[in-house]
Length: 225
Image (cartoon, rainbow, N blue to C red; front, side, top):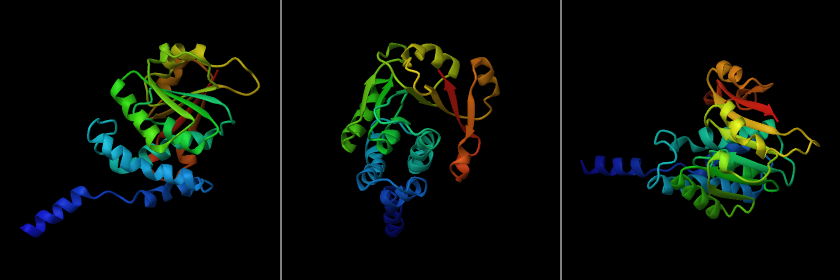
C-alpha cells in the first residue's frame, strides 16, 4: 500500500521535461536562438505554477501546452512573417495566446496583449516578466477600448470575426506599403461565420504547416483591412 501511495504521488507530481517538449517547436522552427529556446522551455513551469492559482488553461490542456497552445499560436508565423517594428495587437489574449509565443519567435516585432478579464492579464504579465520579454506588454482592456494603430490584429478563438472587425477596424494602420489586417485562429465549420463576415478572406489549413493530428480542422483566417 505504501508503495502504491508513493507511486501515485510521483505520478501526480510528474511534469514533462520542457526542454524535450521544445523539440516539437524546433521541428518546425529550427533556427531559434538559445535565448528563444530557453524562453520556450520556461513556459511549462510558469504556466503550471500560475494555473494552480488562476485557471487560464484547462486542466486537460495544460499537459499539452506546447502542441495545443504554443505551436497552435505559432501557425501564424508560418503564414505571415512579420516585419521588424511591426505593431501587433493580440485582442482577447486569455492566457497569452497567440501573443506570447509570437513575441518569443519575433523579438524585433512589438506586441500588445489585451483582455477584459483582469486575472488573466495578471498571469500574462507574470509570464512576460518571467521570460523577460522586452517586445511585449499586456494590459486589461476590451477590444473597443484599445488606443493606437496596429499593422495586424491577431486573435485565437475569440468571438465572431464580424464583431471583432467592427470593434477594431479603426485600429488598423492606414499605411499601404504592405497588406494589413486581421489574423484569426479558428476551428470547425466556418462557412456561416465567413458568410456573416461578408468580406474577402483567405482560409489556410494549419495542417498545411503541422502534421500533428490536433491541427486537423483548424484554420487561419486572414481578413485584409
